[in-house]
Length: 138
Image (cartoon, rainbow, N blue to C red; front, side, top):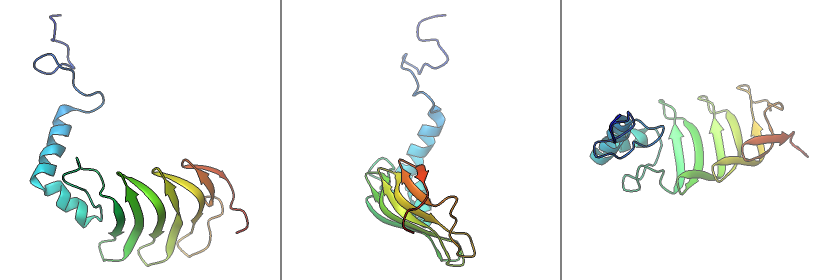
């Protein structure tokens, strides 16, 4: 095979990013540049920073269900969840509450069934998104 003729080669012999088809990257970049993806993200409660490469803007994000009820309230820092997070069912019943550190569940997390009762099987102490054990002193 001739040099630069491999199937993962770009014109000019450069390799395409691994795991990211060029057309998807180009489409997302174009939508961000036109402000189209940013508008959709804001309607979904995602505060994308169009000048930050499409990353989440720092600060609190509040996403809502179509009817306007809050779905989630979480803080973001440098593109990842950082700090307290609460989620609700469409009827306003609390669904989950806990904290994120570096984008992963950390510390005590409480999950609730739709009727408001504590889901003891999912609730517990988390570290780096992994449940270490049940809640203590709950």
